[in-house]
Length: 329
Image 1 (cartoon, rainbow, N blue to C red):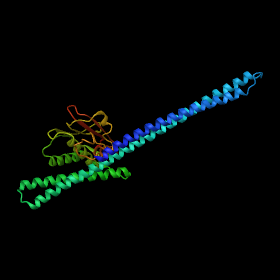
Image 2 (cartoon, rainbow, N blue to C red):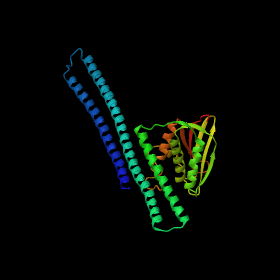
Image 3 (cartoon, one colour):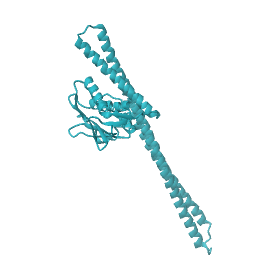
Image 4 (cartoon, one colour):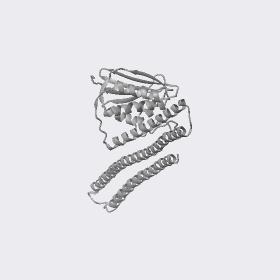
């Protein structure tokens, strides 16, 4: 929390310093231009002063001085406007880059805090469950409940580690997908079945068309499904339905996950696939997450030459849809 406020203050300080510096430089350019104009006028006055009134070429000399003075003024104006324009372009670029870097640093700090929390929570729960099983004699139902809860937390750890590893591979440019023809229908059914076991209290409405084949990396597509379903679970009430659909039409595969949560604003829809981005206020957010899930979903879809979109659910909430090209199977 302290780091967040430090970054907010840093952003405000950068803005204040930037505008003060920009105001000073614009004022300096104006002063420079006025000084040159005054200097040009002083030179012209000196030239006028040395002229003799009886000189037959007096009119021509006056005209030449005036013409020279006018050309100099235009030269000063042109050079000043050009330099000022280049300076403003550079200043705006530096300002935007600095603000972007500060925000990115802020997101990285939030990510590290989120990862720490996401790691500590399942580890603590797993440790508590195992200690309980070791020290107490529980009924079989209670034992199974603790074991199931431990497996669920272990799955959370596994998902988090996979996400971090995949993000690191993407950043390093070392991600190599081994595309093979796979049965996407069976893969998705397996993922849904796993979530049904892990979250028996949640209701999943599943509409998966059978025998849909595509070229892809099985592990990556599994991560795509897991992240989209997990995201829907996080941002919807516990009694809300999660709609999972897979269909094929005109050699186009559409995989969608719809929730009935609070939805995503139009402004956040543009940022929701950015790395480390999480919806809501950093200071008041209650949902878990690292800001990697949807970023990885987009990268996985792009690796399979598809595209992913986010739209509003007709009832309430959000729909994420990934589209791919189908194979004959």
